Image 1: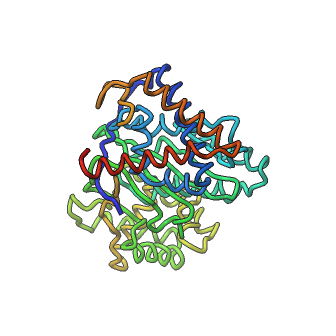
Image 2 (image 1 turned 90 degrees about the vertical axis):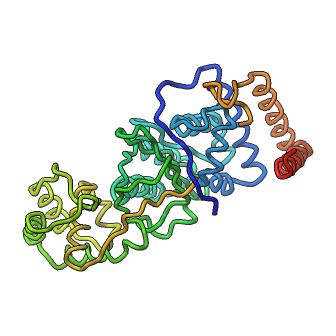
Image 3 (image 1 turned 180 degrees about the vertical axis):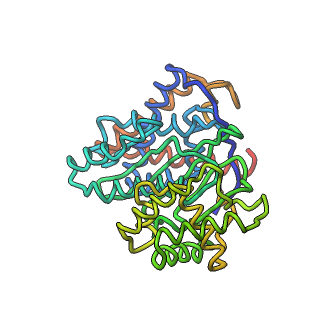
Length: 367
């Protein structure tokens, strides 16, 4: 397991059109090459690796330390394989802002064409997004959600949140084959500039008792009783300022009661059923987690779960300016290799593989 940090400061602006056109071509060619050589499952695995994804974005020529690497790279892949999705058996939905909200519609539309169960994929998309905004309260608001899946139903998620206070971004990676339950250590990696001190992480194994305590409270107490206990705790309990579970002042007792009443009437069988219900947000979960801590002594995890986390230069000239000639040559080589592979000639692919081995040896021995 490789661990570390990547710098993702929030940057404004867009990739220049001349660069993005080339990014689309190269991203499409690399994606196609990997799928042809290794299959869609392997491509999804690579997307779920934050180190590989960062390297891929840098290879395309975007700023290696910019938050825009995430949004631009996923956008370039999406554009790069357009009209080839069915042939490759690989599909990309979602994106930034309002585009992310259309993810369920995109999944359903594609699933109807290729004969997949849309509901299970939509559930995975929704659950991954809500987990990173409700159960992992690290100060980063999700604003970009990209959902990748293949014709076999395998999927990967690359989503990003922003922190307006420190002007940094954080990227979250998921892979279907590693997710047992959505609410316990589901990530394949999280990229961030640094670890935060004030984090409530209910996805950690250390938080398992706290989540069980929340369920016990909601199963055995009425909404009225829960709110009474919550008010008593707020009046009488002293917690250090550093305690990240302290509720913000904008939590309303009335709002908490409405959510609890709706949850109580609807009923649920497990924790996933609870937090995925509409209306159950960070404030509700934070309040319930605090009560479980007080009533049962079931302390949640306050540790930040971050784990990490220049072939063509970068658009801002770092580590050096993008060379259009080199970029176009790379695209041409890959496109030729793909065409030859499709008609049964795989020499170009083998040559590229040999070249990569030579490069790795050179790096290893400082050549």
